[in-house]
Length: 472
Image (cartoon, rainbow, N blue to C red; front, side, top):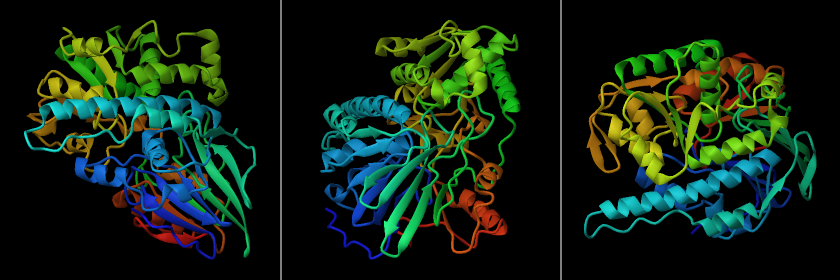
């Protein structure tokens, strides 16, 4: 159990998660006599390491004054119920749309953990310890009671000497860049945490707002060193992959995060069919959470870009309900594995680590007619990364499965900014004494971005390791 930390004399940020990796976002700010946690995400990787890192915290949860949540993706919010379970009793600040999506995300996460634990316990050998879910629905309910919504561009005091302002990050419905003003004994200090930065030009959401200047900028680096292809080319490639798989008579399995990526893929498929560039074929979204998340999207048009608002005014079926079947019941999901003929199945999770998509992969990875399309970043030690790397066989739900299906990665569907996008977002913010710390990225991606930022005029750029601290 972690011991009570001695407060630092000056505002200090410590990097506990998503440091030199892309999952488990979690950073501890100690300032003005308070401890504020920025994000509290699930770490995704090997089962043993994930269990250890997600079960325990390197600080005492009851010592936290508050949590500030950048957005509702599970690697940013997914461990909040465990924080509550272990004694945290303060408020959790987020935007209104993030509050709504977090309720969907955490409820589904608790359900998936229970289902996966039950499945694995049925398969465990005699003498092996039983697997327990990280948290239960009751912990989720207690978490939701602590969510406090703050709109974009609304400065709000969240503690003595600490002011919070959210700016639109353009990455996910309700996603925010976090800006904190600290009235420290050494004078005012400012910290900006980008959360996950979005990309201009993607469908549905507004482009990211300008990143607020600060003494310390903590910036994501998921796609540092990489340049995304134009959105139009990505949509065209998606159509080609669907047609290619259909001609073979196979199924296209798309592991996608139920919140954000699924809505984007559905939007593209809907537009391709409407434009006559893609033939009608069965499309299934096999995720109860995606159904609920899509309803949340419909309820927050204030986050939409102008083009999406215009399309919604003309086409109420923007998210494709007339063409796309949303699967809720378990028996309907199981039946998809025996569906005859070509089809598209979009199902969570995006890194192939949990949820219904794992069962679809178990049934179809050995089918040379089928395709697995990976549309997001695949972290180290995940099944998605092993598929991208071309490994075969792979272990799926305790069984070795040969990979005969076509494996395609389409990073152009990512809602993360690439290196040029991050450089544009931070352009003009370089100044003497300002610090940049790159997080939420593996070293091969973060290092090229760090060098590019130094070339752009930022003098103090570092890639912290887990447990490193920096003075704000």
